[in-house]
Length: 117
Length: 107
Image (tube, each protein chain N blue to C red):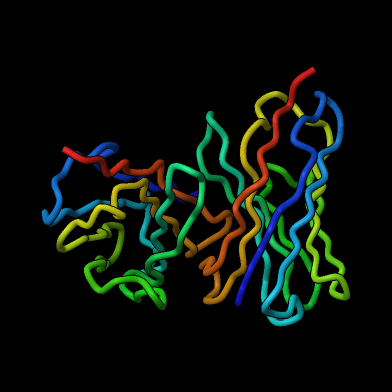
């Protein structure tokens, strides 16, 4: 059974760094791309970037300068790190598995993040 | 970036009714169009990929069609669990982009 679960801090202060972990089960990270998508009140659903099955990454230029996606295949985990947070980064962050290129066939339940002092 | 425009933004409908949600891309996307359903608790469920291919387990009352810049999602006979938000998403080019959503609500 394919499962994805995000865990994050909940509350982050402005200018600080956000770290979210996506733990997966039921499939191998070396066989699938994994994407991060966020949903904010201001912009709705936004694709942030992905990590390929081979480990290389691709980012939305909107976030490129402050976003990093990595993984630990031995722990079945994918990581999102984004620095210089602003209040507009408040939202829900989802990890998702990619099957057909660009299509996300399994999603986590999302990690809610509030950026506030 | 390719802009995705969904219509309507809100769609009141009744149980058993047939409904269609539209999605227009700012340029041709060669059928690289996917649909997702989001429930109020935030859960996102994939429905259709590459315009018309049904995700495994999705009921056959859901269907997708379209070409070029214009695409649609049709639900042939609404069930109670279908009242939710629906989003289209293009994967023809990066960055991947989503529509702003259609809220399907009970009339």
